[in-house]
Length: 153
Length: 153
DNA sequence: AATTATTTAGAAAATAAATCTATTATTTTA
DNA sequence: TAAAATAATAGATTTATTTTCTAAATAATT
Image (cartoon, rainbow over all chains, first blue to last red; front, top):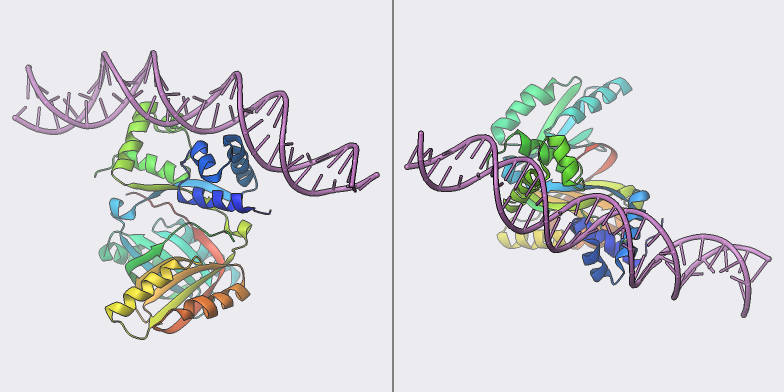
């Protein structure tokens, strides 16, 4: 699928605020309401737009403690890998999990209330998953940038 | 702010799909449309809901290559730190940047087209920022889990 | 128990989305 | 290059949804 300048601008606007009315968008894009409507429908149909979501401020729900957690498996048989991935994906505290290159196998982004909650999470949940060899945690001191908006080139 | 079960369920639903009509939500929550409407307004007013965004599928816009990048600064004077943070936040390829504990100072999540684009990014953009000591890149082999939805407890 | 908040429901008004038809651009191909 | 086909757009109409308003019900406070 090819994007013209209008599509790119539209996607940019929707990534900033998807609750804008088509009329507002039509003004910003110098298009008719119908044209905006049809363009959005197309982007949805082609699954360029994956979904529309509300972003909740973690500070407001007492989940300000962010930890990145490296994990190494004891073994890399397909069984172990699949089992681990299935189990880790179930954990609510784990927002993201990536299989990565390098010294460790996985990188997890974990969201909890505080250090005590993180300890609980490690002891009771994470290390309860089988086949974990070692872990290494990095605590977020400050969030410098965090966006869900991708620039379309 | 305190959340009752309805608020939690509502936030959960909106984090999954914020384009549901209040009527749909009212059915799922066993409430009237107005009740849903007022609850959402309150969550917006209190900034529990930060914003509503469209999530774009990175594969569809040719930005499938994800890299986590560790960065160490040569020095940690406030000047250097602030300058680095300002500069790195400007880069479109950098979706997230965290000041973290551990061996490195920062962890970046970088989104580009491919390895070649990453090389370009490193050479032309990232390492052009002053005061960077060393970097260490981890390439994402597979995205096991990736959600923007936080579980409210 | 009475008074004051707050929350909720239902109806009405205002706004926006979705559909339809006609027109204008753009691309294809003969 | 011109004709035909396709795609994109505008404007009007219909349908659906949000927002506002008023009244009733529920919960909290005195």
